[in-house]
Image (cartoon, rainbow, N blue to C red):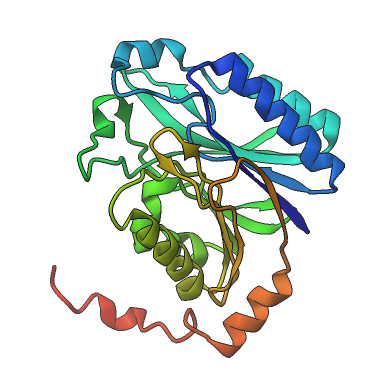
Length: 268
């Protein structure tokens, strides 16, 4: 099955970005992609000067215009869509960083609120965001059983492993990876490692421009990079073959060879 990976530079204008997103979805469908994956913060770029209240005021619910418009476009073009948006929370001046999966009938079949907030390397997402409290169950998509992560989650191997043990054959991680010393090296290493250790595909659409590094990736279950979008805006296409997942997990049976019976013997 063909996946379309979108890499673009989101502006601070929500309506402007939505028009671009709709255009990308239509183009991906015209190229026979069955799923179109977008980066984190596709809704709009948040400058550091934007206050928590300003961000919260621009956020929406899952039934708001942003997701509804994307759902309608997915339905009209018979394509699945994965992305993220700023979701309203019950706490004043805080939002959730929420990813979603929309099926080709335009129905939201899964959402996931980012649990690992990026409070590191000089950033403090918790000043504007609320952390989610649970990992979402993998869902069936055209690509296979799909687990959802978001950006900074990739640095925590426990999460990808739990999603894999729950049945994921593909992990999709909408991201906005901040530029900086060694950051692209970390990005590539972490994406390849998550794929290798779990014997799964890892699909990581990334923001480019502003403060983000681009380099949207698709990595196969043996760690081979199938797509690296470098710094260009646009859509990349990759064919996903679940036979590869089965082959790699058979020849390199890391999940089978785990010694879960011994891991709890070490006191933490």
